[in-house]
Image (tube, rainbow, N blue to C red):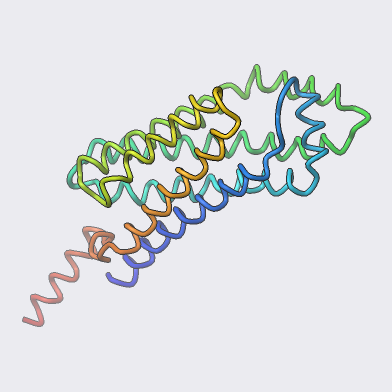
Length: 230
């Protein structure tokens, strides 16, 4: 039981830390987007290697985001079962939606290299973002926001981890989605809050007992073994 449970715990903790680092790197190296899709493609082209690393970081962060947050909600299942289930569900949806949209970012890397046809590529991107891409964009945004909100409330109610972590997660959302329109520095502040919040959760997860990660079957099997020995 302990070996499997430890793997589950360590995977969740590593996912939280990995997601935090990948996301912050992506934000720091992200090109200055503005204007229409032609301007965005030009910004990607001007960014060079930094644009590539940023796009890859965003996409690669989505799987550990889902795994890490599902791991945290696992710790809430006894004290906040409804919030645990809903938080895990929205976190997975958010990670999936952003991963799909991340494919567009990767495609933009190739489009940006074709500088002679930026107008054509811009029309394709605009058509996709206003058509079939809308459900996935909404899924990524709403899933991530609701997943983090439900997780923060669950952590507060279940009293899991330091009491300052839930407010940091909420502050991240407010800074990212409201502050971004007020200051160019809001994105960096949001990245710092995100890094601190997820790293703190990674430490909380890493310090939990392996017993908290054992499946009911494994627990029953270990109790039966102790009973036989006794």
